Image (cartoon, rainbow, N blue to C red; front, side, top):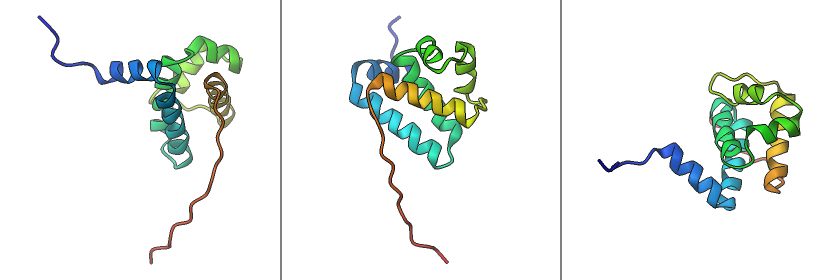
Length: 111
C-alpha cells in the first residue's frame, strides 16, 4: 500500500540537505530561540541542522567531545553547558560557512 503522508521530520531533513539557505535560516532560528530563552526548542532545531548537514561525528571532532555527548546535549532533555553549546554553534557555523551579527531590539514597556 502506498504511503499517503510523509513524516515531517523527513521532509525537514531533505530540505536542509538540498537547500543551504534553508539550513542557514534554521541555524539562525535556533540561535534566536536560544537567545530568547527557548533552550529546548533551540537544541532540537540545532539537532536537525547538525543531523542533516555535517553529522554528529564531525561536530564531535570539531568540538573535541564524544558524539554521544553531542546527541545527549541536543536532545529534549539535554542540559549542555554554555561552553559546550557555544562549541556546537561554532562548529556548525563553520561547517555551513556562515557568521552572525547580533542586534538588540528595544520594546516599549507595558505598564
